[in-house]
Image (tube, rainbow, N blue to C red; front, side, top):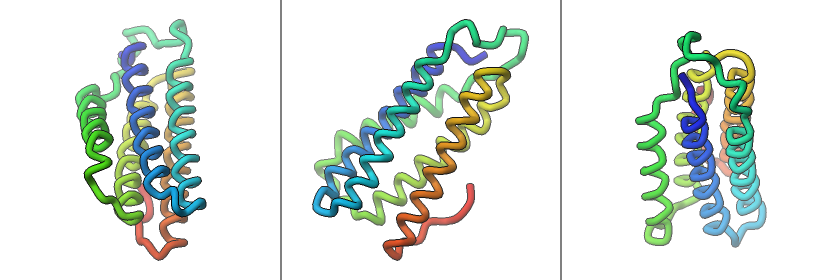
Length: 157
């Protein structure tokens, strides 16, 4: 069963991803279009966190529905990984190609997780469908942005 604390950890994960994108925006501040690209993605991750936190408690499905929670271990490992990246950001020289590839991998994993979580019913299903749709859109934007700069990112999920 997905619980409020599961959504809170997912919200924290969305914020951590947004924080990384914010670091990329600062890293590439010398190029206004590149910095803006990362800034917009960071802002959208903050919106995702707000969606997760705004989900009404009375809309959680009852335990009998058999709704499985998101993979808590994966969320925890992702949070630790992003925290380590954030702490080391000043030490690591990341190229635009590296940043795009990293973001692509992160968005890919977020999209997969949201798709699995859509097995839930009602409002929770709609929430995860919206997040998965946004993740798909982020993947498409990452691919398009990369392609416009001669950087290859794989197609599809």
